Figure 1 (cartoon, rainbow, N blue to C red):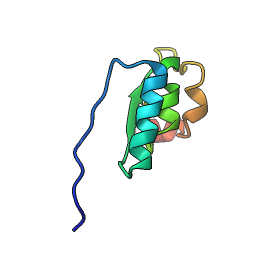
Figure 2: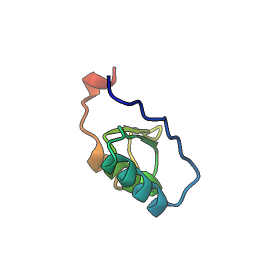
Figure 3: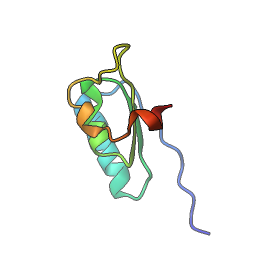
Figure 4: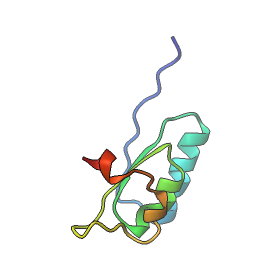
Length: 77
């Protein structure tokens, strides 16, 4: 069995800092999951393996986030 890596959780970082850290972790073979709801999270999302993107009450995503979604209404149910 391979060596286990620690879980790294980060929050309250600049937009650029989130993206840089996510890219660094991914480049070092961490599995990166991004959880975000706004334009400030897009760099982190683009550098992640999996994205959990939150939408507003009217069903729209923040600018830049909508381009990272690829699930259908059926998958959301």
